[in-house]
Image (cartoon, rainbow, N blue to C red):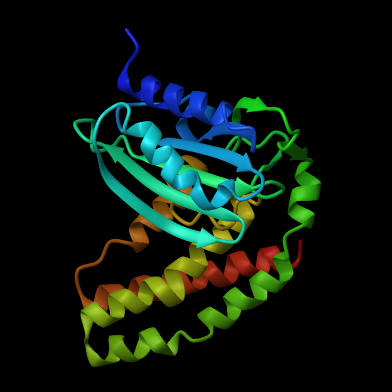
Length: 250
């Protein structure tokens, strides 16, 4: 028997295929990586032409309403080239969110050969929208040196964290630790270990990092006092500097 996940995907893809201005439809995430479990959401993407981008979210919603009431509609962005809306069908698992992303033709449909983190499961591509770059081409398009410089400038403002450590304000220190140190640290580690996706932050980081590096990061997240946070922040700063130094000489 067809389950609700398959039914949601099927009705959306059928509707989109009937729209002449929809050039391609593909799945990303768990479906594309063949790792769907009971907690997986649905990442459905499409490439559209003309004015359809302006009404594609409403089209997706009305299609889902054929299956039942839609109890969540959250428009996450509204860019000139992209519309991202999250839906949820009433009565289904709370984990079964539908991340529906529509791109204007020519955007969002480039992938990298051999990339095991992000790849498409193509439903149809009548417009030849989905294209593949070599890993060398994909990395060359990144401004790695410029981004590394920006991250170093962020961490150079370590005093924003340090002053709250000295004041003994744990909540403020916690927030600034993440903003001015942990996030830049994770990004440089991404640049080293997942160079195709330096901006993934913590998305599936447990899958992507070497076990020893993951253990280091997890340890940096464990503290219950100002004194311990101060110790962890020094360790995080050292790991950032070592990793950034390695990247600078590559």
